[in-house]
Image 1 (cartoon, rainbow, N blue to C red):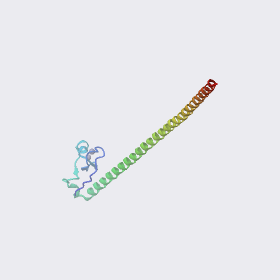
Image 2: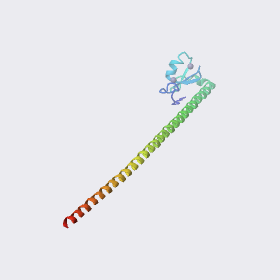
Image 3: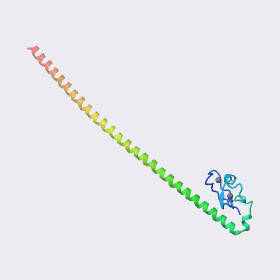
Image 4: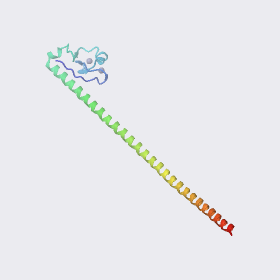
Length: 153
Ligand SMILES: [Zn+2]
Ligand SMILES: [Zn+2]
C-alpha cells in the first residue's frame, strides 16, 4: 500500500500530508505529528507504509481511506472557496480600475472642454483685436492719403 495523497496540511500549508493517526482518525503532516499526535498510539506512514498494522484489519483500512477521502474533499472545498475569493477580488480590482478610468475620463472631458472654450475665446478676442488694429491702420493710411492729397493742392 502506498498512499501518496500529495496534498498539503490544512494548518501547515508548506508541509505535505504524511501520516494517518489511528487514534484521531485523521490525516496529518510531520509538524502535526510532533505537536498534536506525539502521544498517539499509532501513526501510519502513508508514504513509506512502514506500519502495515492497518492492513491486518480491513475495516480499519476502509475507515482510513474514508477519512482521507473526507480530508481531500474538504481540501477541495477550501480550494474552491479560495478560487471564489480570488474571483471576487479580481472583480473588485477590475471595477476599481473601471471607476478610476471613468473618473479620469470625466476629468479629461472637463480639461478638454476648458481648453477648447478658452482657446476659442482667445482666438475670438485676438481676431477682434486684429480687426481693430486693421481698422486703425486703415484709418491711418486713409488719413495719410488725404494728407498727401491736401499737400499736393
Ligand atoms: Zn500539519
Ligand atoms: Zn493522534
